[in-house]
Length: 400
Image (cartoon, rainbow, N blue to C red; front, side, top):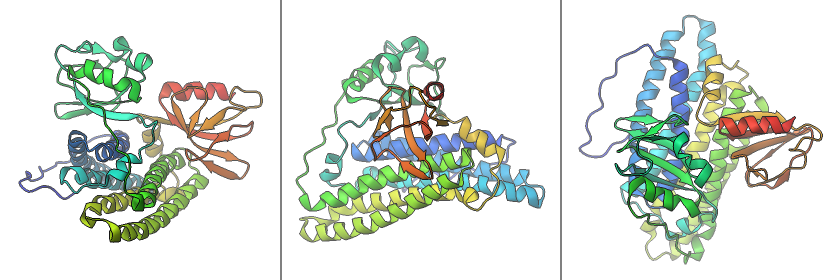
């Protein structure tokens, strides 16, 4: 990881006996959070979020080193080496995602710049992600999330808490919000402002995506947005292929990676064409950085699936790590006459408000990947979805 000038040298790390499963859970949760933070920082020009990305990237480097130590200690014979090889692939993939997220964040912190057309391309219904520090006189201070009942009342979720040097990636009902906690809040635009003000005691400045006035960049920007969507989907499907030991899902990750590669090639051609007419072509550097880093994320997703693609048995520690992470993956078969039979899915979200995303639908021998497709669930469909444990349990119950 490249650092800034004057950055303190890395501290030495000694081997400590630690659960490989716990390390992998933390690496998975951290890498997924990093993707959200990095793109939010760039699309909103938010230096505070970008700084959190670099802090988490440094933490990920440490997790990667400890994971390698634990796995080397665990391998005692050739059979165990073969079984642990896919685990290294997962750890390496998560670390590559971290590095790519750090490079995206530096677009903001190193003032590389991004055309306003990029921020204008944000979907209108995007959930916002903001960082706020809990004020001592906040009505939420020293109360648990269950007591505050934030998500039910406002739709805003505390997805992580940075408390001193520590991170809490899975804040639950019993987690207490303390004064000084730096909370990452995600939620709808209509309510996140009032929650931010209640948490911090400061006025909320709403992001103002400008209208795009650079017609020549529209296709390049649209391709970046699609690359981002496909790369994030590839990461989710990659973890699903591991959890369900599913070669077909792993093949879909490979297909997504090829599609992202093709998109990047077209993006570069469009960007070069636009640069010829731009008043300041240097201002397009941020898009180049974003395209490269977005492709790295899809490559990392392919790294994660390598063991499944090569027919290696999925090590139990990997399955447990995916099962016990912050957001869980669930696979259900839609039963005839179940409430999900005939359920409409738009942009990955079921019409029934369950708070989870449908990632893929297997219908017969074909896979339908969302969220870029509208679909209606039918009896016999095998559905892979991602969400909170509560929403996943509700989805399983509805499928029967």
